[in-house]
Image (cartoon, rainbow, N blue to C red; front, side, top):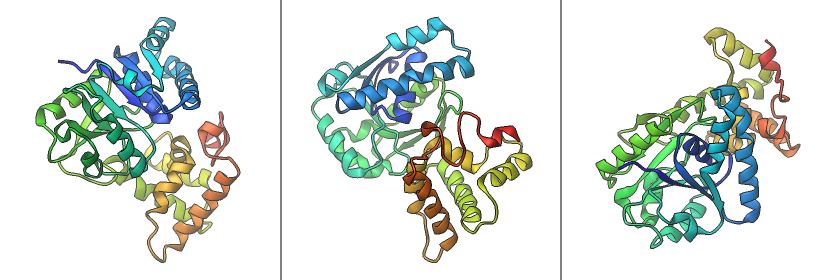
Length: 292
């Protein structure tokens, strides 16, 4: 049986994208967030995706309208969970916040409802103890701009039922993703395990004033034929989250990385947090690396 009734908890950057993509592919979606202000922000995030889908997916006005008609917004958790086949949790990367959320879900879900977390930094084994269904829980991690970078990484725990894993794998395909299966837990999954050292290397070069972000990115883009480099990617993700993740990776004595992160913090303090603010390492909508 297909997972057609989708609840997305959290309307931030990725939560709004997961909701939109699921609805675009025909799923019935409820986007839940904690209060009216958070929902208002979620609606803005969803609305901003219209032009991206027109540009990148050749979406028609009818498809855009149908997508919006399939998304409901609510801050009432009981209302959101009625008839849910799957709950995709995309709330802040804080274990205490996530644990509180999963505890609230207990007793409010149908017996067959599956829970997945989009966490990118926590392991599912850190979260599963707070759920009331360890056999129906796993991590499902999406990359940013999921309509284009349509990767979905599945990371079960030892208690996850294999039939549930298969259902989530099928769900990912149904919403246009290309699922990747992890056979054991790995901090950062596969994607971030590859990306983080790359971004750290770029930050170290910038931290010791070897080159500016645009030249570091151009070096990578020319050498490997890519359409962006590490600093452009960090802008896309958002500098606050990038800074939080990489600050945990500073080894004792790694002064170059620390210096790079301190320089990034100055951008954040100035409100230059990446694409979403119009400025980060680059100014948008016409960043320098696109003109190379």
